[in-house]
Image (cartoon, rainbow, N blue to C red):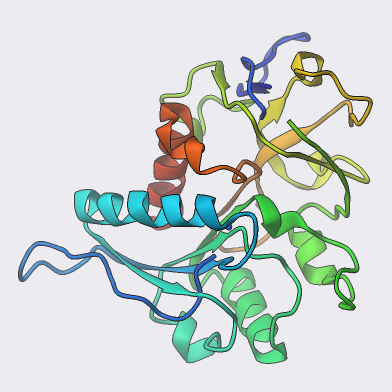
Length: 259
């Protein structure tokens, strides 16, 4: 599925073909050079038992290497039981690795909203983080829906618009990500967020009647204090073999964690 990545590209501009989760239970930190203090600390909330487990496992391997290369520490949790104000205060970046926005403890909900609204740290979310609606008997998290541009999950399609933004550095006007599961929403989040990349639905292979028209897939909400990036792609472990995807992820980490 082609992804668009440009600041103000002319009509018809698209991104190349592409079929354009989070560990809980605090695991260990990445091993840094002996005696070296990490530049920042990252906590990843990872979806552990789902079809996204291969993506999460691949993400852990990649993140451990990036943590060493860029001198940051990594911890993981597999549910929201530990999330509260004091816990989050230890981290400068919160990564939501496909973990959905429901079934969180009330304490975690309150702490996370404060963390984002007051800019106490940054956030990067992947794929399942926009599974917004009524699922498994839980109501929709209205605040999280607003945070994601006031959208609601509608369906999925199986399978950059701002080149100057630091998150899109090195990706050029288009990039390819194949074999993704493309969510659709009840509306485009564009009026409420800063869109960084979108998918060209004309390139779906195979074609699908499930289309949005305007279909953003990477964006940032500039109405909160915390730096944040949502990256729709996050269904397959193979993405970590794709240089465009890992560049996008790396850029996001370094931008969000270094305001």
